[in-house]
Length: 220
Image (cartoon, rainbow, N blue to C red; front, side):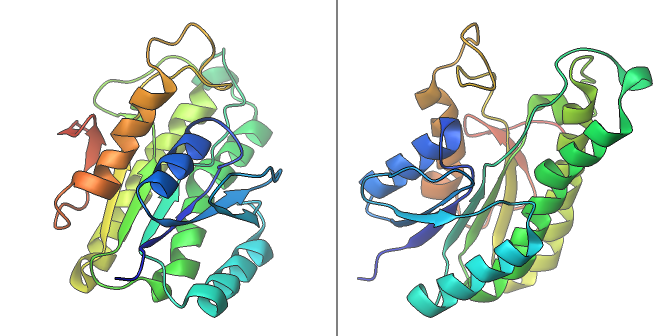
């Protein structure tokens, strides 16, 4: 049987790298998208800056030529530019940059790659509890607002792709010990990756348009 094919963005480090590594171990053909490329055993490393629209289209063309299809897209690339401050002090440039990477890039990747996805395909957008409207966060406002936007993108894509049988979901991996999360975070890299991989490996393929953490639906 043909191996399923997955593209994971942000795979040079942290959660993206761990998710890519684990999917290789599960027998997937893994395309590891990285802005700063480093070898990842068993994976096909693809140079990818998710804010480069021409680069996104080039990756889509490469996937089509080499593999003809894509079964899974995990949008893991993200940035956190503001640790402090509040909504009254957000710098417009930081907000724009956060939106470009955290919300617009995942949308553009889906638009470019979804023509290659068959029925049963899965798209996982790695979001954050900071993006929840039900529990407003008071830290990193540009980051949190951009993740709220990513959640909205997820809902819109889920409805658009529902007739094609492609599941689109957002996931909160929790506060994880990565370069972004820092050493004081309570969750391990493995725990954070588990939350993401549940949507790829275990969730019912009919589940779409939800926000999830550790296999449980959480409020938007």
